Length: 288
Image (cartoon, rainbow, N blue to C red):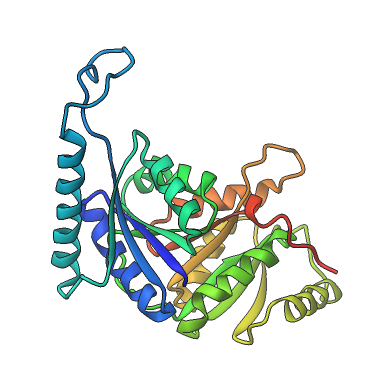
C-alpha cells in the first residue's frame, strides 16, 4: 500500500499541510503516516562536549509526550476521528535525517510539509528543512504554503527543460495526480533567441505520448527572457493548483542555468503548493 509521509513541528505553518496530506491520502487510497522528529535533552547539551546518555526514563516519557501531542494536533486540525492515522514520534538530532530515514524505511510515495506562505523570500527560499529535504529525499517533496486555500488538485503545471529525467518524474507525477483527474500542463519557457521549431516540439510530444500513460496532458512552449514573470502569468491564466519542478544540484557548466535560476525564483513565489522532484532519483529512466 502506498504511504504518504507528513512531518509536522506543530506550528501554524504545518496545519494546512496536514489537511492537504489527509485529503491526498483519501484520494490516492494511501496510508498517511504523521510524524514529528524531536530530540530529548541530555546532561551535557549546553556545552561543546559529547553528550552522555539521556536521563533515565526521559526517552520513554518523551515518546509518550510527543505521540500524545501528535494525536491531539491531528484531531484538532482535522476535526474528525483520527484513530485510522498512523502516528509516530521519532527521536533524531537532525529533523531532516529523521524524516529521510523514515521515508526510506517505508518507501514513501512523497513527503508533505508545511512552510510559511507570502513572506520575505518565502522563509529564505523554502526554509532550511524543506530545502535540505528536497536535496536528500528519495521521493518527491510537497511543500504547502500556510496561506494556500485549496486542498484539491485540478490543474498542475510542470516546468520542463526537456531533460531525460523529466519523463521519470512526470510518470511519478501521474501516479500522484491521476486520482484527481488533474490536467497536467507541461510548460517549457525558452529564451527569445532559442527558438524551438515545430519538428522539435512534435518530437517531444511524440515522446510524451509514447512514455507517459496519461491522456489529460498537454505541452506548451513560451518564449521570454523573463521566465519568472512569464511563469507567474501562466499560473494565473491556467488557474494552477500545483506547480512541479525537477531540481538539479549539479554545478557543472552543462546544467541549464536558465532553468536553475527559474527554480530558485519559483521557490520564493510562495502562493501555491510546490512539488519538487530531485533529478538524481530519475536518472535511470532511459528513452528508446
